[in-house]
Length: 193
Image (cartoon, rainbow, N blue to C red; front, side, top):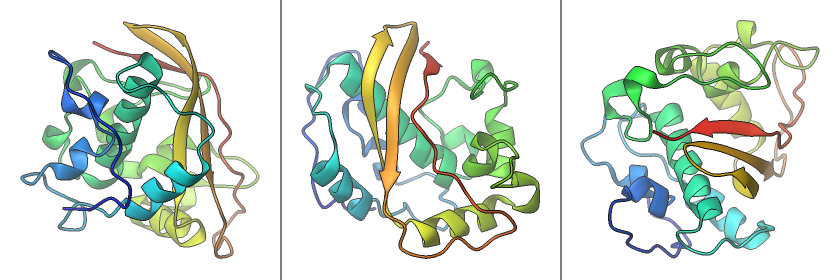
């Protein structure tokens, strides 16, 4: 199990799942099939988040719940290799799309990888030239800690619209067939069921 350098404040709210209350909930899933045989270590990323975040959301507020859900979803999408282990999605109804792109299934994301599912082909990055493993190695090597936070929530459940920020420090050169442009916070729509 991965330890975190800074334990976030969590609260218990009856009826809400742990993955919206604790940003590290899915890291504690001992019976999950993990891509590399064990849960990943997010301690440095969580530390960078705590030290450099721009928002401090009240525990159990809507921005806090959304932030925790997305962090746990990212852990699952990146590191749980068996879709039946994902707890953060409603599998029969789940689709993912970004910037008006076509809806994609969780199975698609498991096949191509989160970076390749999120970043459309462009002058700087080509998901067609990278598989799940190589894309994750490329980005992790280049930017070992890549923190994420919710900046604002514009609408509440069942459809949640929010603005976010994803940041880190480049530690190594990008090595690949194309250069990469950092993801910018865009308005995402998250449907909670």
